[in-house]
Image 1 (spheres, rainbow, N blue to C red):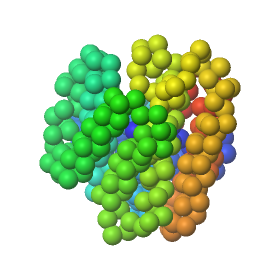
Image 2 (image 1 turned 45 degrees about the vertical axis):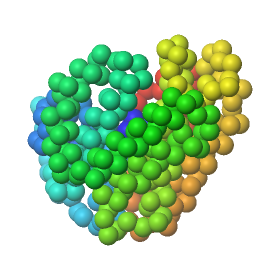
Image 3 (image 1 turned 30 degrees about the vertical axis):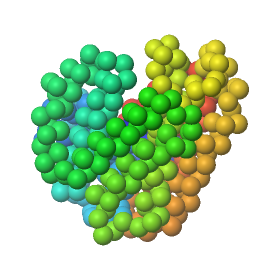
Amino acid sequence: MFGYVVPDKMNMFMKDYYGYRAFYCGLCKSIGKRCSQLMRINTTYDMTFLNILAHAVTDVEIEMKMGKCVLNMVQKKLIAQNDKLTEKIVDIGTILAHYKCVDDILDDKSLSKRFIDKAVIKRHYKKARKNYPELDKYISDKYLELAEAEKAKCSSIDRISHHFGEIMVRIGQTVFEDKYTPELSNLLYNLGKWVYLADAIDDIDEDFKKKKYNVFLIDYEYKDKATFLEEKKDTLEFVMMSCYNTICNDFDKIEVKKYEGILTNILWYGMLNSTKELLRRTEKCKKVRI
């Protein structure tokens, strides 16, 4: 995943902010423990959200303790402790990181991604694949379908984003098991589509210069990002806000007994801010730091 599912810190209660940061730091430490210290670069806001959602829906209270971060060894902070559910999220994140690298290598022959995948991710991916072979096979097949659709210059926004939506649905089955509901499945499906399209909008200038596939470039005479955002404003708002509104509507139907304030902030406010930023910024959107 790509790092667009972020909280709105300015409208976050302090208890929710510290709780979110504890989950983020806890996921980072869990990755270091389960994989390696270098793999901690794979700590993302999107997987942090999924970890919080997983604990909230399955009604699992995560233990939190004061501890030190490798980036600040002086001041202690609240850190969520490792548990079985977090380890599952770490493995899923590792599988996704591998296939993201593979996709980038196919797209633009990225030597840096080839090196990162081979030197850092690959051996941890193999362990994660053994734990979740069916999920790994499904994600691999979906990325191949996505690659074929991109190669065929698919012009349908709905069809091209559908592939990533299906990946998120299958991830949900693995994470939530018997707690999985149609509303939760639909939320994750639209979240997957929203993330894919957000990345396409954010990367459009780079994709144009590198002559890479981007669904918004098909049958469109691209000049610059400012012109693109102005000329495609109605279409972009419709597809992004349709996904966003559906996500919020489904979230309202899901019973969460824990961390509701954090999740509400991310989905109602954080994602809305990300959407607005994507539709107005001519430079790439900077991911917030926690």
